[in-house]
Image 1: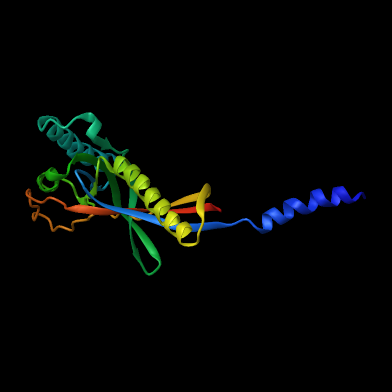
Image 2: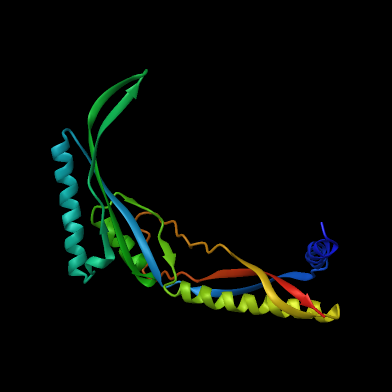
Length: 219
C-alpha cells in the first residue's frame, strides 16, 4: 500500500480524536391556569332480567341528555358511552348464584372549570351512580409548552456560551439536542355526595421543560 494512502486514513482519525464539545442543560418553568374540566360518570342498575336492567339505565340516561339540552350543553361536550349488560353473581363456598343483571353506561362531560361544582351536584341529583374525580386541564397548554421550549433552549445556549468563554473558546454548531418535559399533574377534588361547591375553582399548575444541548467548541 502506498504511503500517501496511509496519510488519508490517519488524518480523519486524528480529527475525530481532537473534536471538542460542551454539553449543557437549560430549563424553563411556568404556572398555567386550568380552565377546562372533564367529568366522567356512570349510570348503573341491577334487575332480574337484562331487558329490565337496560330499560332502567336507558331512562336515566335519557333524563340526563334532556338535562344537558335544557342547560344548553352542546353535543360536542357530551360523550355518551355504549351500554353494557353483564350477569351479576353472588359467590359463596366456591359456588356462584345468578342474582340478576347489571346494566351500565358511561357519560362524559366537558365544561369550563368553574362549572364543575354545579355539575357534580346536578349529575348526582339526576341518577348518576358513580362519579370519577374531575380531570382539569388548560386549553392553552400546548402554546405554553412551546414557549417554554424556546426559553429552555435559550437558557441552555447561554450556559454553553459562558462555559465556552471561560475556557477560551467560542461556540460552533449544535451537534445534538433533546427535550425532557416535566409532568403536569391534573388537580383532583374528592367530594362526598351532596357536598359539591359551585364556587370551587382549581388553581394554577406548574409545567416545566428541560433542553439538553451538545455544542461544538471552536478556537
